[in-house]
Length: 140
Length: 395
Ligand SMILES: [Zn+2]
Image (tube, rainbow over the protein chains, first blue to last red):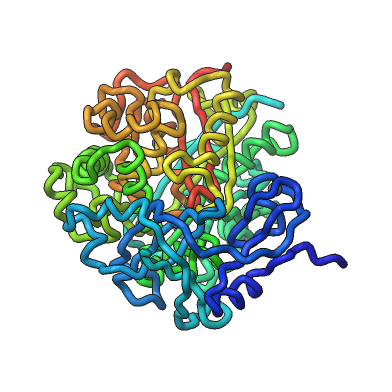
């Protein structure tokens, strides 16, 4: 049977481990899909090829998590980043926690800031099937 | 397709229960069956929302145990799982099967004991409704999703975050005011008189959302009896008709265009309006999925009650409170009434039906008795949405 995924979650994580952000270029519409799906997230084509992304993007929004799920240590920042190549992905933000709260008057100014993706390894939990590899963004 | 009606509903009190998911579902189901005077042998199928019975109490395959407990013979019984939207998905399917003529009477509802899991593990399980590989592993929570939505909303519409938080606080104030008057609510007789300062200065849950911007974890059950409009007359003089249904889906948040304009909700609500031949202006009373204050505002826009970016002003001005239109969450919503996720959609229907019969609790009853009502239920990060439009009159 044919395997339709050109890039699997494991491939994506293996790239991330080396600070490479992998995605898919669509041969139909030319746009980029990230994180990987079996279809182009823009046009639905399955004619995709693996590509390495710049890891550059800008912050769309973020939040400081004080009450985390079991298995996570509190006070981390989650963000949505629009990558320069088009797609939006979720990751952690490496930033001063004090400056992302409502108590800091200029916290909203973080939206739109340019960031670059690296990665962070989080410990495994009962459901994660091994350690968790997560994009970690730094303001550039 | 046949016209379809609801002839009975039931809801347990929401809060903390020392009862199993099966017990909570059956308490609500028997109340609905008694109200409808439906005999056990008349029910042909059970559709039950239940999201985490495995995590909560080690129970999977709950369908059969519901039928066994209710002595319904050997009829088919199916668990529906669409996170917090599960019961509405179950009721929509019951509607479709009855409308098609395959079944005449279906028992549809839901159950959950999320409060009993404790906050850290409940937060973990709820977060499982996100994409596990690309969102859940980051540590995102649902308060986190709607905290991010609030910041985005503030940015897009150029409303200073402090101002937006004050507007959002009015969602909590309104819904807790109603919940405090609802004997079935988790916060009955509690927090009925919140002020803006109480909400914005409460303990931070997920910046910028405080605990009072969030609904609680809850245990509870709710159920409905769904039948054809013609058969309904055998059971009640006051059937409440299902005029339109909708359901929508979407993948991970990043692939969605804009988390302040959820396309799956637009799709689902428009489907329901189209089927009913109605629009947002026709809705008298609305049960919205107010899991968070920002969530109610976003939903009120996506369904079409207010222009994009105007929902926050509308709630601040009281347009969705008693006397406004549509009245949103007169029973307290998820915030005041509670949110046992597998049961929530059926509890929303219970409220609309009670309101349409003029039987809602004092302080919750909309005056005049509403003719057209709607429910909006959300599962995950806009991954599953469902809507039901109910009416006192057949089309
Ligand atoms: Zn494409």
